[in-house]
Length: 125
Image 1 (cartoon, rainbow, N blue to C red):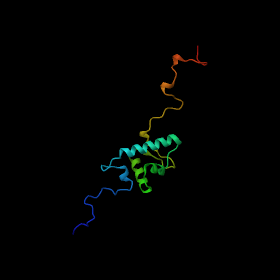
Image 2 (cartoon, helix red, strand yellow):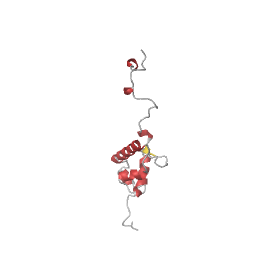
Image 3 (tube, rainbow, N blue to C red):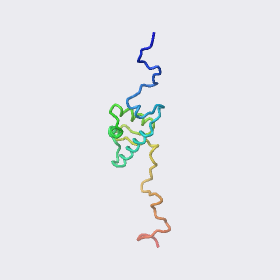
Image 4 (cartoon, rainbow, N blue to C red):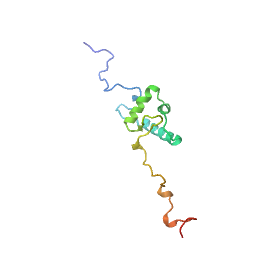
């Protein structure tokens, strides 16, 4: 018997999800520009509002439809670009992409006054 005319001789390993083509290239790697835009949006949003954006807000920014949204974010999570606990507004950059946090009360070396040049009303004489 012959194969149906519309069958694919090389079917994909996994069925393609609606958001997959937006995030992955033909080799199965994340599009660099998509990752950059998502990282920039999430980081800027968290810095501005001190909470994470909703998935829908990220989708709106990226131009994704509701059908494309969840699969696209899942792919970015599996690639360790985005991270979420599943709680509302917990979307954030994956910990490996965030800079290390300074201990509370510490200041960068460039902002602290040298010990030998301490001056002012409380300086020891």
